Image (cartoon, rainbow, N blue to C red; front, top):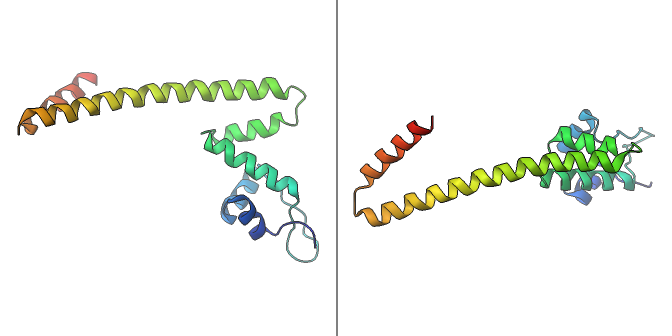
Length: 135
């Protein structure tokens, strides 16, 4: 028999069997027809799962992945992919900015504790005041 069983597809792509089934329920991966025995997936299923996996690594949501996959069937594919990727990039850049602010604040907290000489309670009170001021 040619093709992959769902277990073989899982091993070939590093995507768990239940995740494959979930992607099928969402319409991200077609369900192959059953022909006497287990369903068999072709090489296009491997390609699609690897694409989904990489898109998830790039922090695309499953809805965005669906948009990317749908765009591949559209003659305006490049523009659609660009728009989806640009929106994701903008969000990631905002999140990076937030994480950099958090890192600066944590570094300052570490510095204060190291130089405070045992007055961590005061530093934590100041931290609480800062949190209230931001709210």
